[in-house]
Image (cartoon, rainbow, N blue to C red; front, top):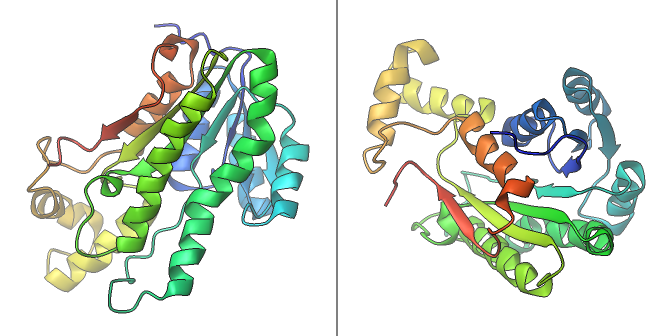
Length: 256
């Protein structure tokens, strides 16, 4: 299928590693001119060089940083708000009110800053795609990570509200709610967990056990791969997805 993305321009926030990097790579493979965003010049340059993209540096928790990214990126057709933080050590017992505010600023308000800077241009041109990356915990919170779940519920709500604001504009707004993703950072956490549980010392030794133990409620029976999420994001970024807006698509292997 031709996704008709050749010549489009995209900004992917938080794209120097993990899922954001995979999304940037997948978009670039479809002919999109990708702007790689991060705060570390060396890491951003490395990804941009690999995929043939450009770089926009800036701390999106500040207006100054957001302005710098807008200036460096120029106008874009596709905005993927991927930037987010997750701290597995925070629970009801030790998360503070300031922690709640800080994670909301990163996971939600940074997206608002980007929307306000890039979406007006999309509306003027009559075409655009805005995609929020969230988590299934936004709709299915667990007893831990209440702050993280709340920010992802806000991301989903933001995507739906924006779609109504963009009615008849040619610009769509959606969210992708992720389940487990086997990114390099999550693999580090799984390795530590597996070693403590006695599953082995290397990922190769413990992969089968880890997948089985950690996905008992996942119908597919394994952890999702970054490229499986990136493929869906790339479809949503394309003209082919023009009748999809205001929705949150769950990518969780059937986790209930």
